[in-house]
Structures are given as structure tokens and as C-alpha cells.
Length: 234
Image (cartoon, rainbow, N blue to C red; front, side, top):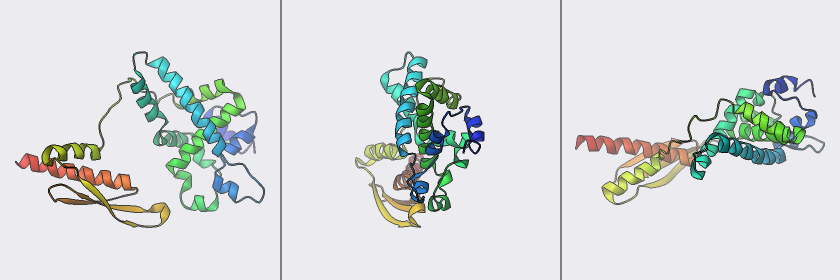
């Protein structure tokens, strides 16, 4: 087992004294459930790693940005430890090549699923903490986030399309737009959501997305383009 994970340990620049911790961190529940003998998955390590990551990132931001207030630090931390960021780091380290997945999860593209990658990244952090203690976990996090720290604590606060559209319709019509789920298509793991957006002036827009939220955002963006074009015409 140690030989199998040697390339990964070299990649992450941490050598486990007990490789079993790394093995557990890479074990998804779908794999564990398929084994004849009881096998621990990575969910407990994920829980631990999430807490260690938040503490280490908070500590580093506190040191880096002396003039930032609590709200600014919270926004930066949220951006750094969100699913997309962690999944990107997991791919950079090659964790997806070593994850142990069940047959069903593997066939459904779990090896590249953002949420699974982020969970595995947190589990590996938890494994480093268990194996080497806080300082080793802290140093590990500093290495993997080396090029991720922002230069400034001024975080962009641009609003999402739904919020922007609501502001526009309130100003123009004194009413809010409404969103209706008009249908879904595809299997559960690849479901597409269809949304209808109704503006107060009766204009309707339809959009599809891999989640209800994404579909609504796409519809709102389309509606904003329409309203801006009408304003320019006037």
C-alpha cells in the first residue's frame, strides 16, 4: 500500500508515517460499501479536515491583512475554501487518480465530480493532521495554497444576476420577477432543470441549467440583457 501511494506523497510533499490515514482519506463511502469486510470511509476525516483548514486559513488571513475587518476576512476565507477552490487544488495534486470509488460512482464520473474532489481534499488535510499534528497540517495547507492567497483584502462584491434583475424590475415596474420550474430532463445524476422567468411587463424567458439555481441565474441574465436593450432603444 505504501508503494502504491508513494507518487502521491511525493506530489503533495508529505510523507505519511502511517499510510493507512492516507488510504482512509482516499476511500469514498461508495467503495467502502462494496467491500465484504467493514471498511472505514473518509467522511470523519473530511469533517476534521474542514475544521483544520478553516482554522489555518483564518490564522493566515489574520496575519496577512492587518487592516481588514471581520466581514472582509470572512469573504476571503469563504472564497478560498469553497468547493470550487478545493476541487481545483485536488486536481492539481492528482487526488482524483488515487481516490477509491465504488463501481457506480466511478461509472457516473465521480472521479471528476467537484463535490467529491473537495471532500477528498478536506479528508487528506484531516489525515495529515492525524498523522503529523497541527504544525504539519498547517505547513501542508500553506503549500497547497501558496499561489491562492489574494494580494488585497478588497473582495469583489458584485451581485448575482437574480439580485440585479430584482433591483431593475423594482425600479421599472415596482414589482419583482417570478421564477417557475417548468420541467426537468435526464437521469438523476445528470438532471437538467427548465425554468420560466416572468417579468412584471409580461415578457417571459426560458432557460436550462444543471441546477435550479443555475437555470434561474441564466434566465435572469437573459432578462437583464433584454431590459438594457429596451432602455437603449428608448
